[in-house]
Image (cartoon, rainbow, N blue to C red; front, side):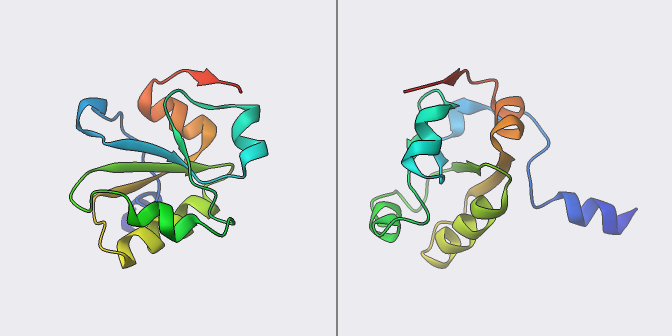
Length: 109
């Protein structure tokens, strides 16, 4: 049971109090982002050339939620963010997982 708990800790399973969250960050490509993203999410494409520059603009003391298509890119983004001094960051996993964890609306465009 302990192993299962540790395995699940990489992705969020609880509901988040969004009043404590500075930003929700979608790390997918701009095309993926346009096809459907959480309302108010920032698009910081982890595969893009400006990803580190975008992360560097964030307040290192604030709280951030990160998601992607499956959770893999979000995990890499969380690692990068932590290496840049941002400790309060959570991998929400996939878009659907992020929707469940935040209760934000899915928007296109």
